[in-house]
Length: 151
Image (cartoon, rainbow, N blue to C red; front, top):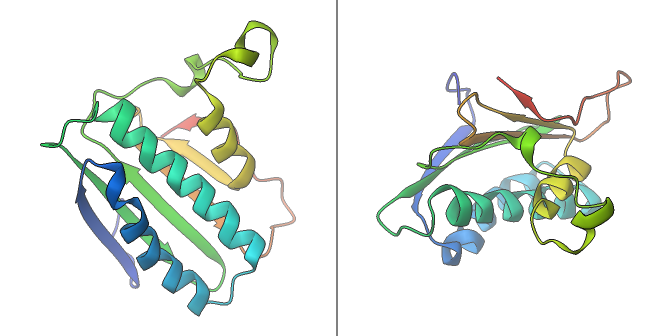
């Protein structure tokens, strides 16, 4: 997370999928306090679980000595979450579209597709080991890009 915004939080956890629900409960409490819809809660939860699982499994390679950092910010307009692992990163544009041809029966790429489908903004850092996701409560009138973009 670039700058520490008032109301933002940082959680550093062990690289284990077993801590996903604990972290989600913290974020969920803030989302509920800001009166987000059930649809928004579902979308952010799905994207968060996919991104966190990817960070643990693919980024940190299930190494229990590594950590995942979650930075999040919730206000009345948006939910913004950054997930950073200690892995070598990847190029999201190289992940094949799981909806086409021979990729239909391959397991990879489905989580990224779900994240892009449910979040309004999806960006990766240059290294590819940090993901920023944003879900707006009120959808802006301008078209929000859900394309993967390196920042």
